[in-house]
Every structure is written in C-alpha cells, then in structure tokens.
Length: 123
Image 1 (tube, helix red, strand yellow):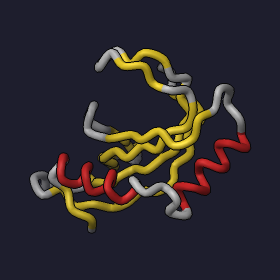
Image 2: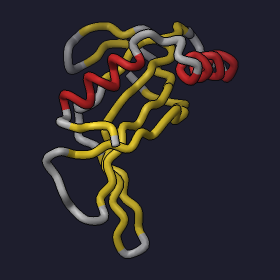
Image 3: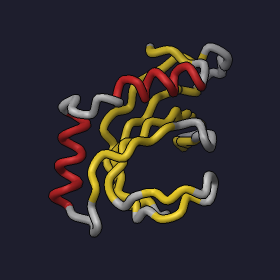
Image 4: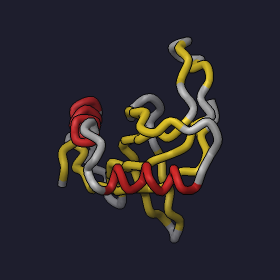
C-alpha cells in the first residue's frame, strides 16, 4: 500500500473540546490521493488500486517562525472513490472535482465521523 499524488480539497477549522493550548490550531484536512492498493497490513484485507477520499484531524502549531503540522495515527477515515489501475492525472482531476462538487455521498458522513471520534466541533 503506497500513497502518492495527493491533492488537498479542504481544511476545515475545528474546535478541540479537550485541548486549550495557545498557538495551536485544529483542522479537519480533506484530501484525495492515489493508492497503489494491495494488502492492508493492519486489517489484512486487500485494498483496490485507485483514488481515495481521506478525512483526518490535524493540528497546526506555530512557534518561533516554524509551522508544524501533526496528526494522530488511525484518527481519520478514507473511502475508495475512483478505480484506476495506473495513476492518471485526468482521473485525479475527476476525483478532485467529484469531491469538490459534492458528488461523493459519504463526504459529510466522513467529516461527522471524524468530529465525533476525535471530540471536535466545527468552528
């Protein structure tokens, strides 16, 4: 499983209900990426090759002129959207447009799932 060619679709500001640290901003990052597929070594299930929609909470911290983006493993979700045996810029463009135009029915449910799972609220 290899993840390549990602495009950020959105970065939604959120409020972390538990953490109140100055200089730290919380977001939900939504992106489309291409995966070579194969065996998922965490659940031992085969995954198809193609484009996925990913929703993951991230933290951006700015300190001393440096910006850090971090995330917690297994805190996000993904959904397979476009099969593609070989990476194609045209198919990437199609997948990005599908995500931006609301043509993926699971989009809002994925955001809600991550918000609940990570104890966040949209700002």
